[in-house]
Image (cartoon, rainbow, N blue to C red; front, side, top):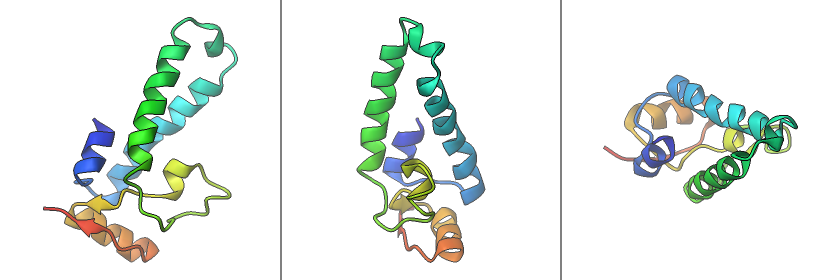
Length: 102
């Protein structure tokens, strides 16, 4: 759902975007957890996350909003497409111009 929304143009504000992206942080912790990596379903989760990541990476703006050396890629970059409010937030906060979709 989240990735599809980003593909169509993230249609909320930057606060909601960062609330939504927290899920990817949680998934990363799960994928790195030694206990969870012993469970049989972890490979399914790893494949699903990799597929979603691949889709998301293709639509990220080339200009970072945070230092890619110190932040994971999903936090260092934002989608290239966004609704007016999201695009204005990102422009104001980071000086990054997004393509506005209505």
